[in-house]
Length: 427
Image (cartoon, rainbow, N blue to C red):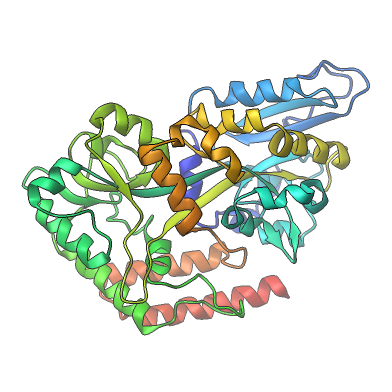
């Protein structure tokens, strides 16, 4: 299976820090050899390499190669990278054979920034900064500098089957209590109530349990977690009860990121991504709706996770100024390409908010709802929420749900790890 856009949203911080310890990489970096021909036609123009991960959607590779060929200020060679893309990039950045430009989920990691492996693109973005969705751009800003330019936005939401909820006499859930009741009400011997993956949602719902309870990853002082609170402990205990209620489908024909369980009638509600919208519409017509994740507790709020692959410039590239000029041309100036990239290969949201109405899949219905959710309820990663902290939280959630561990004690362990990590990266 290719590393599609949907997968990085589930990684919540990625594996880059662990990969920083990987040394060496293949000799084929995608960098054009001196004097070789490339997409731009050769000559005296700068020769730049541009890396992408392997997208799951048909036509993306051809599209980005077409964009590169259209640029007349440099010769751009696109390298398509199947497999463990994050590890590949992290390893390459430790060598002299770096890509000039590479995409990365939600911008470079803090380790990349602090190691001087990537360049500040604040001036490249310039006044266009305000044209981009603020929650999407936020994870790419460190010490008031912008380190990447967003390419397109992915998000997740809850799909529900209208006819099944109507038959059970329940409304689309707005609160977590309503979700629990609705899942139990619509469940039959043949159809599950709620599905969020074959791990029962442990992998994909972790961040949502924080945001929907009204909290953030980190506190305002950015020196510890932001959810060491009784309301959070209650929400986690309720999630554990939900898992045991019988309303959660824990085994389906495919995982949460695939439309199959929902469109095949295995579940009445499924947490999945915007990218499956065309499949759902084709299979179910108008017999479905979408909502954000319900709020948890009295201080909660509805929420959706968002993320964006973004374009990054390597500090050790052959011509950083030319690389910055190219990503400005492609991801700031060429709005027709930006709409094409978001709208023609699956369903995604342009990173510049003014372009969303030009994406016809977002013009009405569930697509328009998704764009509204992102603008009003979107949450993204925090650079200080490191992969090590994210792993500590995943472990805590697993212990709480599967081993009946005390939420307060488990979250205290996450706080300790987060404080140590923040001290490390700020050291």
